[in-house]
Length: 171
Image (tube, rainbow, N blue to C red; front, top):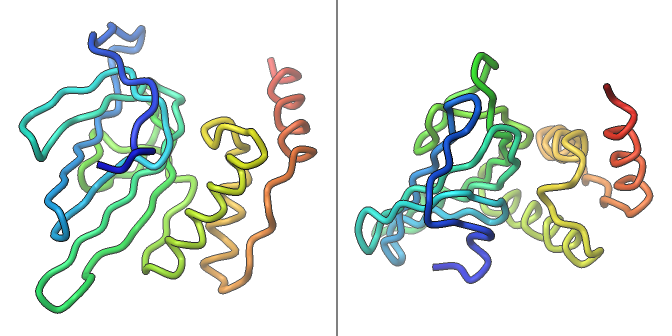
């Protein structure tokens, strides 16, 4: 699997106060179907077999889910979704392989757009910032710019600092 696919998986499933975890089913059949987590901190991993596993994320966790598939004629699916795991009672959008679903911060398909998002994630990591801690508004900005065919702005340390200060100021 991708060397950067998972960070922080634990072997024991904790009981969450809300009683709900967001589960993501990952499948890996080399050069056929490949689902992986580009960033995120799973708190549980369940291995179903050598090609399939389920990662669990607590409410509020942000993660990037990449889906790619091909057939004999080439790539048929190339997508990335950046999601926030929802709390019990929150509204959410459904996605294949994600139970129950999540709050979509960014959603794009087609390799050029997916590659652009992957490069933006790399740039955030190069700043020494964990992409799970980046401002949700930034991911929405990237989504909107890509949808409009415009280039998204880069994430900056100053933007990240402002986001962290806003979080502390909220009740």
